[in-house]
Amino acid sequence: MKPLEHPVVFTCGADQLIGIVAQPAHGAASSGIGIVIIVGGPQYRVGAHRQFVQLARALAAAGHSVLRFDVRGMGDSTGAQRSFEALDDDIGAAISALQREVPALQRLALWGLCDGASAALTYIARRHDTRVSALCLVNPWLRSTQSLAKTHVKHYYRQRLVQRAFWLKLLKGGVAVQAARDLWANLRLSTGGRNLPPDRPTADFRTLMARGWHAFLGPILLVTSNDDYTAREFIDGCSADPAWHAALLKAQVHRVELAGADHTFSNTSARLAMEAAVTTWLQPLAAAHASIESGVAT
Image (cartoon, rainbow, N blue to C red; front, side, top):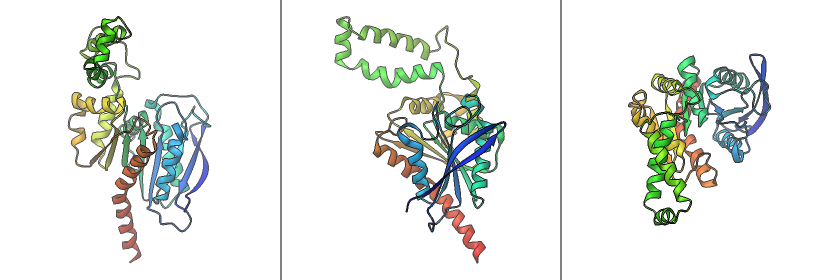
């Protein structure tokens, strides 16, 4: 059965935010779980290759109620565009909107891609919102100038240096000359060379993300794509940053790495695998809700 969808308009300060709520079809069982999708990057509620539309519908078909929305300054929402570090009010307003639209919700999860995942963690760190009982973090953004350089050296240049074509181009004075210069620049940056360009956004967002991760007591799903530098940078950064020490080892963290997937799961098999990972992870939460409902009924 096709999920039900309807638009919703809600306020955030003096601005109006636009979203789409997807729910199970009439007569279909409801899990009692709501999911707020926090989009990543400068895009709106549809997403690259309709990613968020398809995700919301897949989750609704599995029994969940889902809100995907435009933050202020994006898509059809009013207001000034802002950094992912300044989305606390938008996220809080979206949670309230989904609860108003579906009053029967018992639990709520935040799903975020890239800096949308980062925004979810910084929101938890600053707001301590007890309405949020689960986090789904997809290819989180943990970038710094140094970490990006390390990622390039580790995952790109190591492969290039063992390729015969690279050395042939270098000896012939081809494009590999520039590649060699880029390698040297990345090596200097990755080892903390002088004159590092300033990080944007501010460096302390990574510490705030770690604080939110460690403070959150509910289940966390971490989905990473193995063909994505952002995901690799996150995993490498967790290993190197003291603020992230042991973060991935927390008992409630479930990790899924998807082979053949890029940053936005642009091929069908990767997208379906991501959607399946999320719906499978949500099943215990839905089962807990069903158990509660059964107890009330008896």
